[in-house]
Length: 451
Image (cartoon, rainbow, N blue to C red; front, side):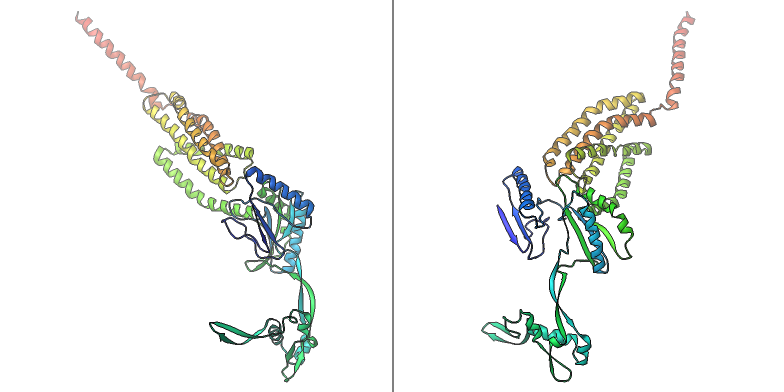
């Protein structure tokens, strides 16, 4: 199934669509394949056809991804007060993009300049004749676009009466030269005596951000290359250019890397509150600051497995993966609390500390491992998804590695910091044993003395 849109992009038929503005030299095709393997074959085939048969076309063949609509993988934003200077800086950024062999279809969102006709007024002659620029504009507006004179009703409709040049003339340059402009002296002067039409090249599209002219340089990447890594590399390579910019001009990262940084900043802002709440809950549960810190220290163990799983799967470490790593913290801390609580219960029951540490790790090994495997198996169905895949891979790898490491690291840490027996525990049994021996001797000696 193929849907074609010429002069504009597809309507927003689902939320993350990267919508395009109306543009006469733009076309978009939506192609629906039979299944995922067929889609991948179509993507490769379309890219080859566009590159070989249509080399003059700037094309991008991409999948419909979930998440924020970034559009282009790598983007850099240039801002400043003067549009000519912004254009010059953007050209330098574009040159740096072209030096990277992985980037393709490099361009900016102002696109190429378009031809236009500019009316240049001889202000000295116009003032001598008593004609203002506003009066010239009004007369040209009336001749070419028309000026409303009145309106009348035709049944239920209201029809406007507009005065303007005939349709065959008002689209010609001669229409501008044949317009007469009234002077302050009561006469009329043709526009050709005080102004002329000059062909110029100007920007067809001009974007602004914070009311400043803004140009975004964009490019595509091959499949399998992480856009954020390439964007950060290019941003570092532009450090010399950024340091030499005049005040008011700046080069910033835009697109997926910017969205990822904003999402991570929102998480980092709430991280201190989250840690404080976790510490309070651990103190309430364990009622011991040292043990609470030991349990909290096992949380980062999940990052080892999460990083390994993301590297093996090739999934990006983005916002969704970060959520998975944060969720890992709770699972790992739960296992640690179970182990510490079991050790404390065994010590309270009278076991030696070393025996309690080893025994708790052995007894809780199977329940903790089975719980971890259950969580990993439950994440397999969503691991193939485009949106939730990074979260699933991060949690699966983190749970497996952190569970094994927790069984080994936490008992070792407990034995290192809290494994020594209290002095009262070591000295009290000996006097008690001596007293028992004395009582036994007294019990057996008394009858013998009586005999």
